[in-house]
Structures are given as C-alpha cells and as structure tokens.
Image (cartoon, rainbow, N blue to C red; front, side):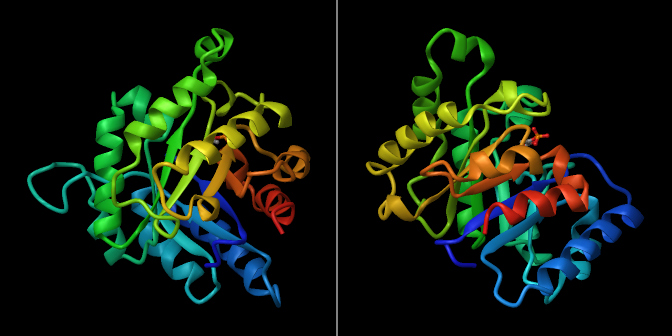
Length: 251
Ligand code: PEP
C-alpha cells in the first residue's frame, strides 16, 4: 500500500453469503490484478463469516482485506466479539472502527472507539476511524465542532499516518442516497486536516476518506476535492461495476 495513493474501501456490512461474496471478491480481484500499475489502493471489508473465503479469493491480487469492527481487548471472555489479533491472524490488514451504525446501534462512545483503534494498532492493523455528524447537528451548525470532538476522542495516542485512516461519514448521508456536496466535504476535510496536525505526526500523510452514498456517478466530483484521499463505500461496494466505477475516479 502506498499512502500517497487514494484508498477505496468497501464496507459490505451484514451482507453476503459465501457464494455471492466470493464471486464478488473474485471479480474485483481479477480487475485489480489486471491493472499493470494500479494508481489506487482497494480494500474489502466483508462480514466476519466471509473473511476467510474472501481472503482466499483476493490472495495475491493486491486487494486488501479488512474487518468491520474489533474488540478493544486482544482475547478473553467476550462472547460474540472478534479481536484485532484474530483479524490479523486471518489476513486482514485494516479494521473499521466507530462506524456510525456501531455508534448508534451499539452505543459505542468515542472512548471505546479509541480503545478499539488502539487494539488495531497493537495487532499491526490500520484502523479506519469513522466520524460524522447527524442531520440535526449539521442543521444546528455544529458539524465541524462535532467532527473535531469525535476525532479528539476517537484517536488513540498510538495513531500515526501509517496505521490510521480517518473516514468522514455524515450520518445523514449513509445509505440514504443523499451524498454530501463537494462543498460540504471540502469544508469538513480541510478542517480535519488542520485538526489532526496537533494529534498525529505527519498529518499531511494521513488518508482522509469520505463516505456516504458514494456512487460511480458522484465519485468523480467528490474524489477531486482537496484533502479527500479516497472513499468508504457501503451499498455501492456490493456491485462490482459500481464499486469499480468509483475506484476509477480514485486513480
Ligand atoms: C458506509 O456504510 O460506510 C457507507 C458509506 O454506506 P453507503 O455508501 O451505503 O452510504
């Protein structure tokens, strides 16, 4: 992986059987392996049940594998949870932490997200730390303040440009078909870039992804915005042509 290249990451969420997950992964792996000189990095984050078969399907293609969440501890009596160590053991190099669906549905706090990112770092994984405001917060003029607060609370002291990616995902844009405008994204990403300078050495090299209803049709505009270093893609990452269409705008 080359941190100067854009990263296009697919979050499959709770979707996919072994048959269709492996077929999708093979399709993408074939396309990526066919590039003579890839100008973007690509990552697939399938559900936990598909990490092993998807990992096999993309082996040696250059695609990276990631988890969608991890526990803050490395092992222990935590029924149903998966540790970053386990993710690394199965071949994952990334893990998403603090996705808004985890924050909302599982009550995850910034403190817990930072602990999960710290666990990812201990396991040698890159943490993709998600932040983003709700519509109510945006309408109340609090978008930048909320993002700053979440960033401050969710980034552990172990964060470096090499082991941390930040994903700005406004909650109102996730899965709604209503992506943020290029102007909105520009404002937040410029703000985040300045913000991380006081927290992470080599802040200019930290990849800042935008996520929220990214599609092939809007990726061209969004991926051109300064300080946008790639996309975190949910729904559209489940369709090979659509995801590939987004990736093409990251090159
Ligand atoms: C996501 O889940 O991270 C996401 C951005 O979803 P979608 O692309 O479907 O809005």
